[in-house]
Image (tube, rainbow, N blue to C red; front, side):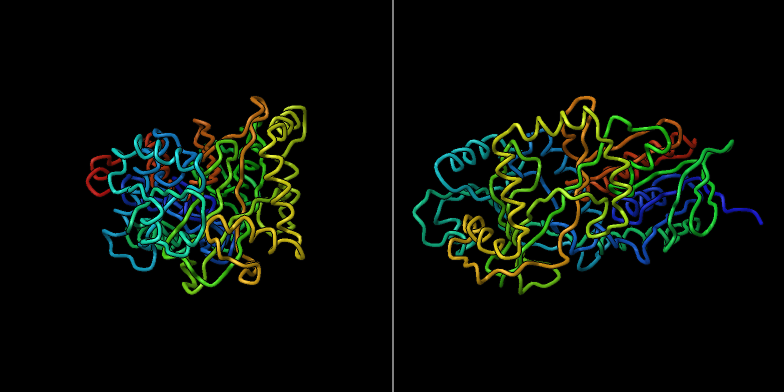
Length: 435
């Protein structure tokens, strides 16, 4: 019996893999492709609504973004909004207010300066004083003495259910293209080269493809290294956890991001799955997993971690910053059951000054894993989303924040490469017209 053969195989059924399938079916001449997902359903891991921040990043309230980075993220977010709203897909995007809150003289001055530089890019982003904050988020303004300021957008598409977005992409792709097959509960054991391209050895047999795109989050690096690429990188898995409390915010309230910390700043926002609750977090904890709460992923972590002088040198550089050391110790304490609620309540009062320890409950099972890359050769963290392109019919996407927001923009970038490699049409004019 002949084994199935495709022009393109996509490994990973999260939002990045689904977005790539969507773009390939709509905007290229690729005639046959397969998406392979090891779980029983798409978006089962980091793209599930409970496993991420539910935030559509725009770059306006993420204060660690440069103006250039913010413009790139805004373009990608606008593209995603146009794609979803043009097809009237429901319950994927959510409108609500959003703001980044400054507390104290230093943070308030930084926000005022940032507003001046970013106002042309974000004309709907307003600089609010205490009274303005109280008008949008009364419980955030509260009754406190510190100077307050905020950069705020009163009503925007800023929350997203990435699980529903994943299913939207796949449903539209399958409806558009009879050549797309989706294999669920199908684990890819390895990739091997053949004379015509590549063979995927899976739990359901062999699949052949001319081009393979790996969109498997933290696992992507392992696939890359098995094929001889990305040896300079290691994975630093950062697990994020959240607390729940009765909702006392109308929208997303972020805090000022430290330039020394690549991880998300503390924020509060309504849980789009359970709007009576708000989520506060995330915390950040280094864990030896490639998937949150999955012990079977530990061996994969150990293989990709590759402890050597470069890795230890990177850790030494990270821990050499006092602010990072304090941050890591504090977040470690948040994982201790008898301490975490009291300690986290102290931190969260920066957003909600009247918050009490008794208001909080640890959100069990909520929060995923960020596959932060380490460049061992350069001894530094690789900030933002990352990709390894072999130029030989293989690409590997490793997507920490804001990877999910960038999914459609990254898919267009990758589809252009795939079409060029295969000699297929890439309809750039249609992309420009529709997205």
